[in-house]
Figure 1: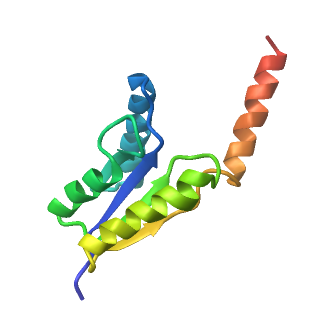
Figure 2: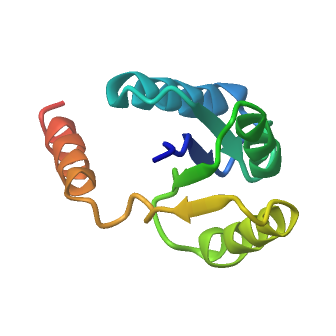
Length: 126
């Protein structure tokens, strides 16, 4: 049975502040390292490169047949309800055999609540 080569793409909004985009790229590198993922990419909705289409094209040239898009967004807002599905649909129109799975956003994950609690508690001690 043939193994399907999978790529992980961390998809963020993008910022005009390049250090913010670099922070997302750092998260992607750490996810790759800790998850032992050999094929990862960062993509942005706007204001930074690559966009999702470019990132997908890049991982396809490296043999990806399945792509998991992890939205680096806190909530399921308009970008994840409208923009991301439209982008994915366009990609699938151009690559009908490709498999793209989009995960849930960060909201609702128990670690996020813990982070907010720790930040609030830290502020109380200052």
